[in-house]
Length: 277
Image 1 (spheres, rainbow, N blue to C red):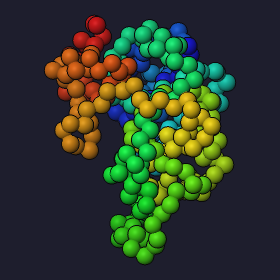
Image 2: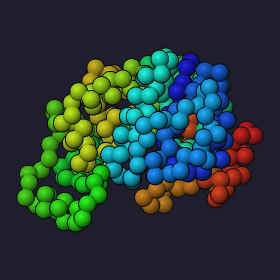
Image 3: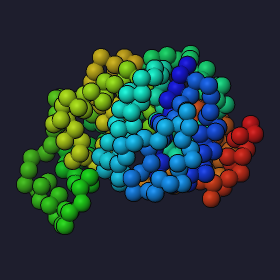
Image 4: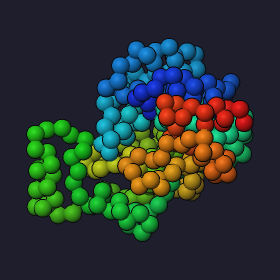
């Protein structure tokens, strides 16, 4: 079971190295996208025969299409590598496995050809995301008085509609999909530039662009509404809770393969304990 772990990171090179070491396996390679705004020098030591630093880097901004583009750039590099992978597993630099590497590979071995990603239908199950689709958002752009322009665009223009009659679905940006699924997504965005432009004018498109494209394709049958990650939003913040050693029982009982987020500077003992188990 060959896995390409695709990691989006912007900080904490030592924690990122720890994540790579923890997931190291003869059948695993790593493709790491470092935010273009970040000095890549501290991350260069990560590169080896199994770890590739993605060459086409993006300046990533929260909620902007740049996150999607960084992911697409990374998937393109995986596809151009000439290597065949059974799964492409998207992680952040602050994710960490809850299972052993052997158990993770075994799980994917027992579930071939699936697309593990959250797939809530926006109009029926994820109502707070409706305005992402119907309104114009200039998050991906940076110019003087853009918020004023955005305001008048939404006042004067009719509500936006999904192109190509796509049904929007999603929730979390993190996923594990096959190489075939990744190629379909990359090719679709390249061949349907008006669809890409639509998502460029959408806030938080990273949370539903990949799911939407697969859901409206022949690959819908492969989709499993589970991204295999445990994420705690109970604090009501714009970012999920950072786990500490107090969360260990919850994490171990979650049944998930991975969790986010972790920060060694906040609590490294939780990572130590997960390693020891």
